[in-house]
Amino acid sequence: LGFSSSIIIEITKKVQENFQEVQVLNFLTSIGISAHFSAQIFKKLSDPITEIKKNPYILAKKIDRFGFIKADSVALALGIEKTDLKRAEEAIFYVISTYSIDGHSYYTKDALIQETESFLKKIDEYKINEYPLKAAIDNLIFTKRLFFEDGFVYLPEIYKAEVNVAKMLNNIFVNNTN
Image (tube, rainbow, N blue to C red):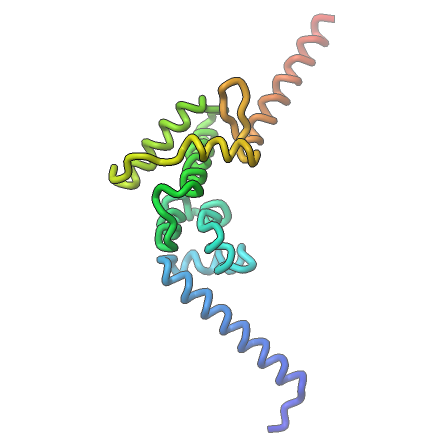
């Protein structure tokens, strides 16, 4: 046909890219993700299939307006059980993040467990009796996704902000009393 090797390489590259996009779109639609979110996923995840299979809750963190409940339905479609430790961890993180958005700094450990359990039972239509929430909180603290001090559980960035505000107020107090 008379195509140069550079044109053949370029055509081959485009065909491969299109094939990969079709594979990703097929995967996304198979787990209930709409075309609207697919475009964002293509932009924000470098390897969508691998990343979503590894942790479907990444969608709630990286995709605008996706949210925990949609990510949870993807997780369930991928076979994650409702009592899975990873699901419990992500639910806890969602609950405390929502609480902090509302202006609160911390939860007690027991209150966070209770609030997360109520949240999960509501979305699971009260069909599940027990979730591994204590183990999930301990794991989140161990992996430093949450901070625990004096019986209170914080998001690390909120804890750091609280400590910095306390230091600044203390400096102001010390400087004004001298």
